[in-house]
Image (tube, rainbow, N blue to C red):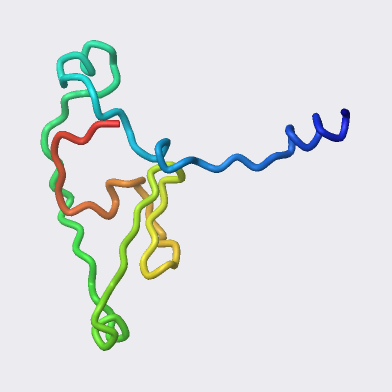
Length: 97
């Protein structure tokens, strides 16, 4: 029994696919009133990815963002960023989580 309890405490938690998405229901007004989002102006960061010679020769580039861990991956390699998710955004509006 103690083995079972210890194994439960040491069990690595991983996010389910359903947990990787933010709230998708409720009006903007309702979310604002509950403090789940704030109404900000559109963000224009202007970030543009520069394609490397290798990516050009390959003919593809893969950009991934994982909001659970706040990390970008470029072709499977973690990108270094300084300002969170917004660091690699060209522009956005009406972003909520």
